[in-house]
Length: 173
Image 1 (cartoon, rainbow, N blue to C red):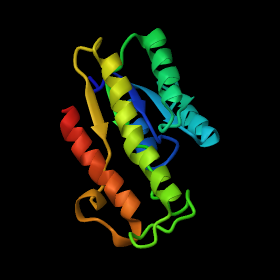
Image 2: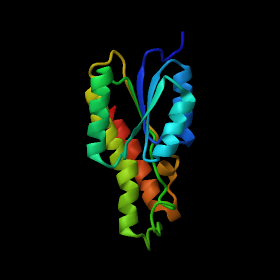
Image 3: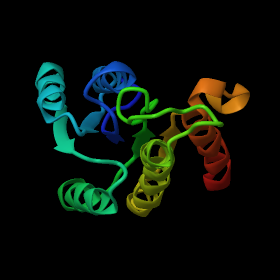
C-alpha cells in the first residue's frame, strides 16, 4: 500500500524544481496533489504529466486572497487537507532589481523576497491549519535553506527570510 494513499496535499512552488519533484513522488505514493504556482503554463504541464492524481491551481503565496480562494476550493472539494508543503521561494536575484548586500540593499527588493519566502509560509500555515482540523493526521513541511543558518552576505534578504522560516516553523510546531 502506498505510504500517502488517500492523502490530500497542497504544494506551493510546484511548477518546477523541488516542488515538482515532491508532487511527482507524492502522487506515486498515492496522494492527491494540488500543485500551485504563479507560472500557470508550467504548473498545468506538470499536473498533466502526473495525471489524474494531480490538479493545478494558481497561487501567489504572498497574497492572502489567493490563499483564501485555494483553501476554499480544497474545503469544498475535499473537506480537508492532510499535508501542506510550503516550498515556494525566491532568491531575489532574478525576481527583483536588488542589490541584496546589507550595505546597499534595495528595500523594495528586500520586501519582495520576504513577502514570498516568509509571508508565504506564514499564510500557508495559517490557512493549512484551518483545513487540517478535519484530518486524522496532518503535516506541514516548510522548506528553508542552509542559508537561514549560516547567512549569505550577498543575499541578506534571502538568508534572513529563510532564518525566519526556521523559527516560524518551530513556533507553529
